[in-house]
Length: 113
Image (tube, rainbow, N blue to C red; front, side, top):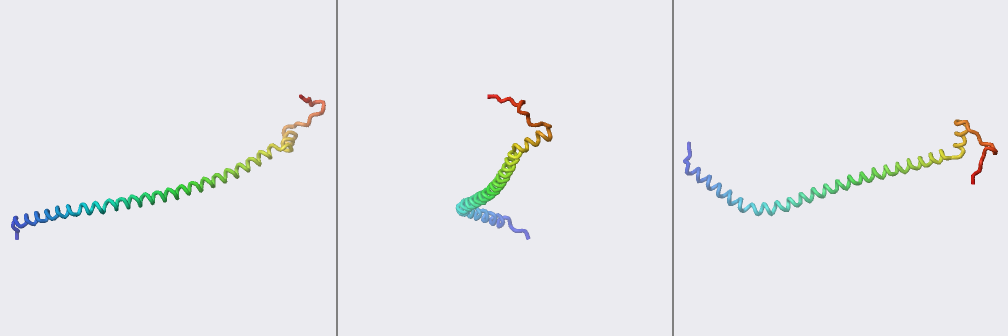
């Protein structure tokens, strides 16, 4: 049942020698395959990353434009409110009704030149 050690050793040595020979042959082929494959993978990852950045920046631009339109609309409303608050009729109404003022008589008016 037990095998002689010399046969076993020959098999191990023969296997190791063939492995070393195969590894010497395969390494240049492996290198010739691995470098372009690595370049293709890196290029693909860079392309996907750049496309994601373009999409993300597109979303940011879109939201910035939307916010800009909202700010322009708010600006228009505020300008209308300023014009309304500055109107002579409103100022006169507030002065007479809320503050109890009246128009001055002609003898109370002093003109400065």
